[in-house]
Length: 414
Image 1 (cartoon, rainbow, N blue to C red):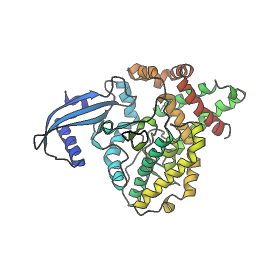
Image 2: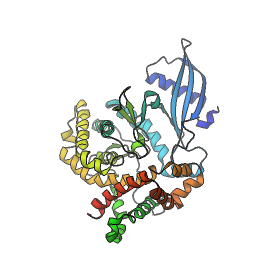
Image 3: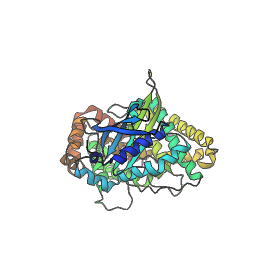
Image 4: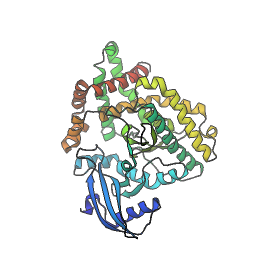
């Protein structure tokens, strides 16, 4: 197998194997016998990358043979349209920078929140393979997580945010993380503005089908996009509130859970895909993960309790570093920020979910060709999403639930 397929040289393979053995405190003397690459699936894995397994056979110093299996994430293979989109979006270079310069030091002061990364360069990331450690995604296609999964997730999220605070308190230099998802002061033709406005047009088409809104439809449609635009303000680094390293992309598929041998209660979780990382108030990450993978009924029953648990986890992590959360993020300030970011979680739900909950026949068409990708992001989004809305019950019910929560509480009550 040619090394150029992964843009890895033989010395790169040698280096990442050395890193693996060192990080796992194993005998570091070895020779590479062979290595091979295979896709994780025959089906397209997503819009923003290609995923592979890299398997390397080593001969150790005592002649023992050892097989290492890594998970690799690269820029989309053979799709110039998607590659151009990613380069404009800046996602791969940001994620590489996060794994090189942010997460190692942050995790060293709290706990592991992401998979170990053994190589990060050249539009390529090579990780430990969490699947071999019994990690797996926790949601079905509807993208919904249960209480136990969310409780587990909040502990990892608190560790991520607390690690950032501890680093700041110790005077560590921050890596600049430019906002690439919702940039301010860009022209209407900027790809992120085009993407945002197209998403809003799709969602307004859905709203027009909801009977209870017919009498106030003109008002709702006129005010919908301006209210959605609040997200551009909420995700920015705040000038008045505490800011932390934030994941920025916390939906169900970016959270992997490890389960016990006989149980379905998760033991721990790891976050993946840090390509939208930012410095922002912690409530934005928190409300995102408590909104995208939940229903309005679940939030009515459990939101307050889960917010309190996150704050408790954060307090415990800071206490281990001899820091008092009351001096850094007082409880009153925390809940004030939560109220401010509540709308942000719902906006993220709508912007993410109209895409990620699409039925597989739609996503297969979109990711299998350059034309399919271009069609969705520039021409046929309304047509594709309306077809899913009218024919797929899972898609329709999830989007209706999010839309009604948003319109009832943040458009009609604005």
